[in-house]
Length: 80
Image (cartoon, rainbow, N blue to C red; front, side):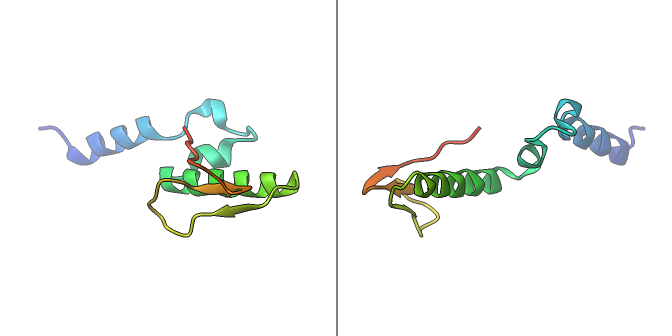
């Protein structure tokens, strides 16, 4: 009879971060949940725009048609 625990652990193991990312600079990013990746990307874009001298703000709404506004232009951040 198949062991459901073994099957489940095998499935999880297949979904773990690939070894190619181990020790790489983006390893922590690859390990984030998708929502956290999006949050990190939005914050990065905001901070980078500010560092370049632009006025930038994040949308306070979780769901909306834009994520970051830079110099009053709205942008949707897409992260893969």
